[in-house]
Image (cartoon, rainbow, N blue to C red; front, side):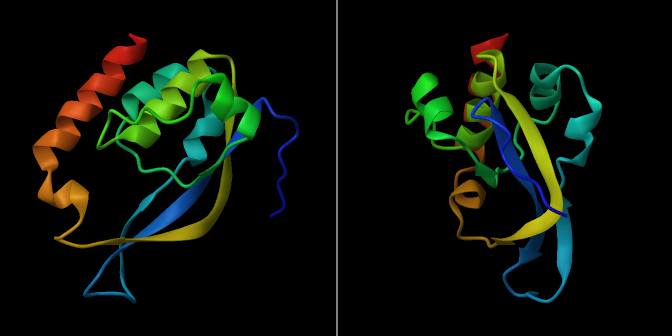
Length: 129
């Protein structure tokens, strides 16, 4: 499948295979943005799917237009970015191929700081609402 950014108002997200560090050859799940193409309300989509990790390609213009990532967040900074992008008029499309592998492990920031990540999840949801 071939996809390109049509203009700087369109940003791209990739689907992701998730693996556990001790079971490298076995998928334990996926992060799939394929339903994004079926929604007309991307703010609603990202509010309902806040917490999805991101594997995206963003134009410099878009990132500068929303002042980049919120560096005050320690977790869920990607969903916050998506919400602010679509709230500012940018569109997000999905590259439906699985181009990324994400490895989970018990020592990751999100596993070690679960409550902080949940706090930031709610914080980014409240930014738009």
